Length: 274
Image 1: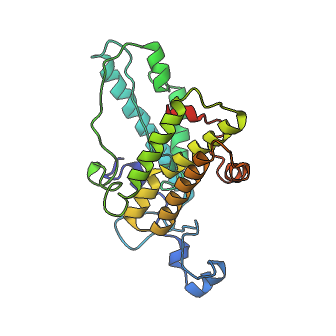
Image 2: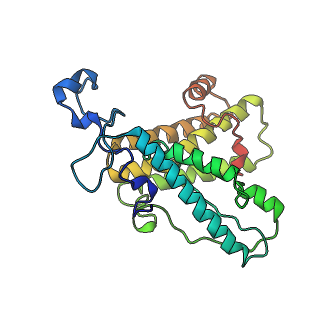
Image 3: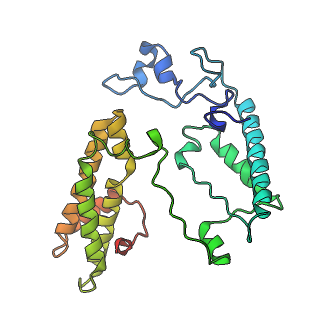
């Protein structure tokens, strides 16, 4: 049931890369494309992965859903076996941390949400496994050994070379300076912090977080829409700088525009940077 690519590589699952935006006749698609006429992903995908071949069989959603449920059962079975083994050598219930890139479920792996739902349904009926957050686990077991993971990533070669190389290394001095600057502001207790100034600094924090998104550096490296990634990085950094530079005389018009444009993290408090 397991493959080199993991469950998402199963041949019955929908093929993400086979999209009608590239498969169908250009003249047929033309009325639905952007004015400049460039082919693009449409979200309509007719084929399953099938195998390591250019020939693809039609996608069957019922078969794919059934396979996702089989994979979910296999995943839970293996986690139960893992926990039972760890229970024999640990002085407390083991915790299995399973972090995933959120866009895996539904974007790259179309059936991912079905898999995830089935995993949670099965765990809810399982007497060995319990879903829990790391914080909840620490509350139950506050004394643990300190562990420092090795620096690594899911990127090429398992390190950071995708996000730090010639096409994107220019962003980091700017991001680091902005992060240091906001950290210093967050530590200050004599800012005469009016509600308006707090809104301004909270929006500055949003803009900095958006500028720091690792997607931009990743896209610059892969070159898919590199100019867009550069544009977004520069825009969010400029927004951040414009906001911070107006802290003594808040630019209300700019603040309102950016709050409407980038309302991410509505309850953010800029002091998290302290």
